[in-house]
Length: 139
Image (cartoon, rainbow, N blue to C red):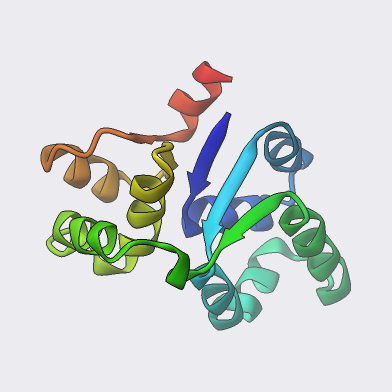
């Protein structure tokens, strides 16, 4: 299965440190927008604190997880899809635009557990979105 993952899924994977996430990422084609890296930089210390891992172990897990993802740079996405995604996200959370646009561009589902995003985009007619429970039912 091909799927776009948002930051909350990445952060959940990192905080939990569970091999289950690695397994899911290995068995599927997982895509992220390049914005995820700046978010990781911004929240690195908080993530390390929540994992209760030593910084070295945390960084090793990050590397293992990111070996399994495909990063799509912003410039590789059409302006038309950026505009569509912004219209969908602007009243919900503009910070989710890069994830929605990547889903639009690649025509694959967006995986998130953000309830506000899930319900908000569905209300606007964007249905190519799943939460963890729905994703696990598909795999």
